[in-house]
Length: 122
Image 1 (cartoon, rainbow, N blue to C red):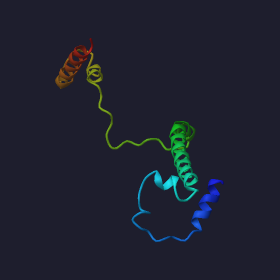
Image 2: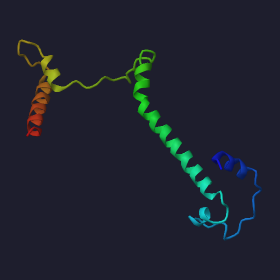
Image 3: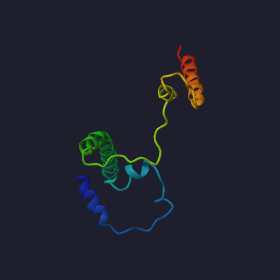
């Protein structure tokens, strides 16, 4: 019997009064009583499998879809601030004559950055 016929047949049944015995949870509800229990259980598992596979495929295809849509999407706007410049870039922006007028913080930051990177390397 196909799973679709099982679902249609179950949808047409009238609800029965629930008793304490019919509210039990477990494999016993599938194996005994209604012969279409296995079909219903497999149909439910198949539906969940298809849903999870669809989600997986959608996530896997997302980078390709975004690359395709990239020419049509607007550029990313800034949020009112730019990325912080590295201490080395600030040091490189100092005047070439060697004066440190107002750039003491940049020099200290650059030295701290160099010391930190040397300490991190093996």
